[in-house]
Length: 146
Image (cartoon, rainbow, N blue to C red; front, side):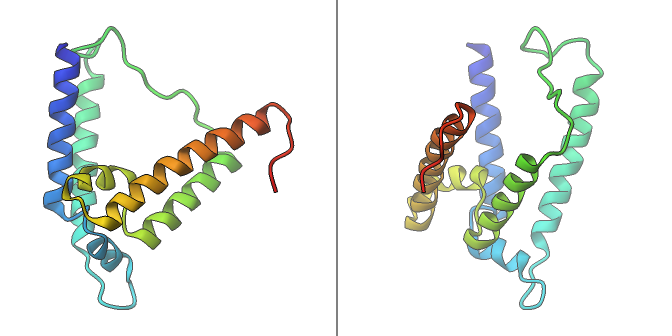
């Protein structure tokens, strides 16, 4: 129960930070990506602050023998860069640039009940299910639809 409450509190704090920083506002994000127009560099400070907090957090957390609320650390072991990773990163970046939202801020923005955020989140869930179905077919050697 302690882990669940801690995760909830941290997620709530993270979501609040995204809202306060303007990351749930697609216009703000698109303004950050508009280098040759009305560029808004403020999100660079948000990302820089997040990077700094993450770097310090990892330094302190990994200096411990075990996590505070778990038996062991669960760190990624795969380190190779492959076509699947690069393709996913490109699709993610294109979606972020076109919609002005990425998954974390979109989920944090669900509480606003804005139509564009609701449509984005619904599309994200549908896309995840479609990917899972196509990935399962491909891994079983079945031909992909289309």
